[in-house]
Amino acid sequence: MLWKEVQITTTLEAEEAVVNAFYEAGAQGVAIQTLQDVLLIQQDPKVNFVDESLLEMDPNVSIIRGYFSEVEDTEKALDQLIAAVKTLPACGLDPGDCELMITEIEEDDWANSWKKFYKPTKVGKSIVIKPTWEEYEPGKDEIVINIDPGMAFGTGTHETTQLCAIKLEEYIKPGDVVLDIGCGTGVLSLIAGKLKAKKVIAVDFDTLAVRIARENAELNDLGDMVEIREGNLLDVIDGEADVIVANILAAAIVELSGIIRPYLKENGIFISSGIIIDRLVDVLVALEEENFKILFVQQMGEWVGVVAQKRD
Ligand SMILES: C[S@@+](CC[C@H](N)C(=O)[O-])C[C@H]1O[C@@H](n2cnc3c(N)ncnc32)[C@H](O)[C@@H]1O
Image 1 (cartoon, rainbow, N blue to C red):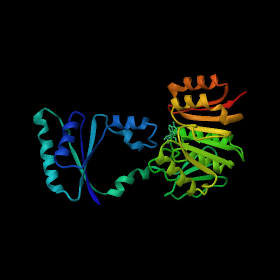
Image 2: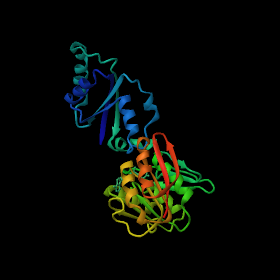
Image 3: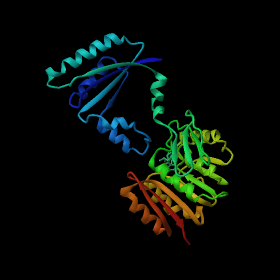
């Protein structure tokens, strides 16, 4: 179905009034974009990529986009919208230049527009994480992971994923048993599989992530070796692993630290991330209380990755 996207660039003070004008003119949906919002989105751990050019936005400007379906009389809607915006100065609001842009978009393009920002990403020495729809010619010794993230976290572009991936590359030995707690798209499990782990068990409590991770395992011919289970943290795990990786939030890493020992072999490695720098101390204290030796701490942006080893 075709949609008309009508964009008006206005001032922060006129933002609310312009949004109202959009709705009164019959817009089916309205999206607001300000520099403030972009900065907030960038800090959200569930968002993997932000178009860098958005960070150059004027901080005093608000871009409002309204969406009109083809069944509406868009000409009439536009006239009504423009008339409403023109009344704003009389109400004491300065709407600025009100630059207007109208674009026709396919509904499908709208839903998939984020895909153009997701490109193959090289992580560590040999890992390349690539979206399924991009072509990539691997170099010698490169390991390519194909990912279709759908709505799950884990494109490989986020600092926390990369912190874990780099350490998996360093610590996994052929034949290892690996657990991936909070697997999202399954990206870390697939890396472990391609690094020749013997068995990988991945867990997520999000049903959608579990489905997407299973699809990605099949896509990478790792369906037999990487097993995806739905559940909370270690609830659906039995047995011991050589390496456990968990890219969740600090609170979950602290909780895991207290229950993880029985699931790790002697001298086993626990790689964790998703830890915002302010919570690093809590994680380190929790690990030390459980007699883990801290082998490595690395920061990327405001995120930290920690590698710890189980001691007797
Ligand atoms: C930050 S994402 C990491 C995804 C992927 N492992 C990566 O590194 O890109 C965290 C994932 O953990 C899952 N998660 C959060 N809390 C969990 C819990 N208590 N038990 C299982 N999964 C959890 C979320 O659903 C999400 O998919």
